[in-house]
Image (tube, rainbow, N blue to C red):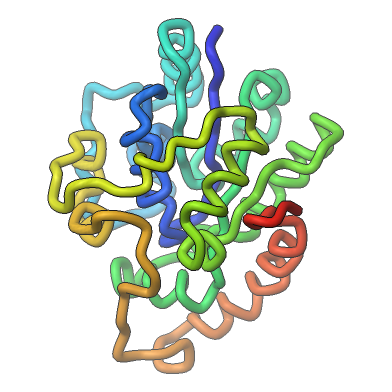
Length: 248
């Protein structure tokens, strides 16, 4: 079986822009949020606006897992997904986790929460995502005996080449500088399932800094300050274990 690199993230973490780097590389089959169908369609955990998930895509946990493994028999695979999508299943599946190189991406919570609320005013605390990302990070550490590779979005935006190079070195793949830029507006078919959520990524030509602007803050909307206070300590614990362009 070929390599499987998983990028475990929370929403609104510029993870789609980072995924685009792997699309541009051309040496991985990139699967876009394969477990979102499990959470939002198959299990119907909550409603979320802007989903256009292919009804023919695998939707059960075993079905999605087997699809990823089947693709890896043909070519190296990179996928990014929200930790909360498969969490209840994958946390009890160490064999699957051990088949992958599990990496993580985080972003400062205030930016994430405002961005998420702008897309989905009914966002839940679980969907903010840091709690289950932290739990999955710790589970991977427990299973593998090593600290997983984790990068921070602000570091990545400040130094796309340096942080991406450090990530590539940490996971044992070549760094391809040309993959850090692309033609803005190109249609990425895999993103159609959540296309309204990826407008900024679609119109970008590389990883950019703070392109979102908001006319509200954490204290202007119900629950947002509570979400921030809950998730911030988890973000900080993950942030302390990140790698940067200079290393860990």
